Image (cartoon, rainbow, N blue to C red; front, top):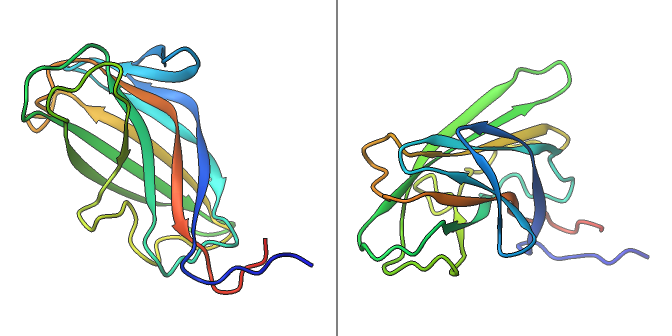
Length: 178
């Protein structure tokens, strides 16, 4: 008999990059994690492989997309920001395609060293990436994560490494069977 879970349990679904977007140089974080390097004055990132919205996702709750980032070199300047843009496209059989997007100005840690990875939650202003009821189980959803270096809000004066994978964190529904 499958295990039954109560509501409000967090689940994490890995997301993998399917191709780059804009000005990106392929590189790695550490010795084995694929990443894209985006320059300070460039706009670039990558598309995540589209996924089907999980059956166990409580779509009436907020959810978040998270990604690892690191500076290409040590950053000793404090008070900087990276401007991220997140686009999500949802689509269903014989349904409309819907694009949802927002910008997030992420505060760079003071004294950020190249060896310090940060797991960034792309925040639409609510503390999450996606509002309740954006997704429907069975929909296909794709994501594009971009650093918008030319934007005046992006004050980080160095190249940024963005892992070519991310995580969709969501709440599971009541009594879901896994």
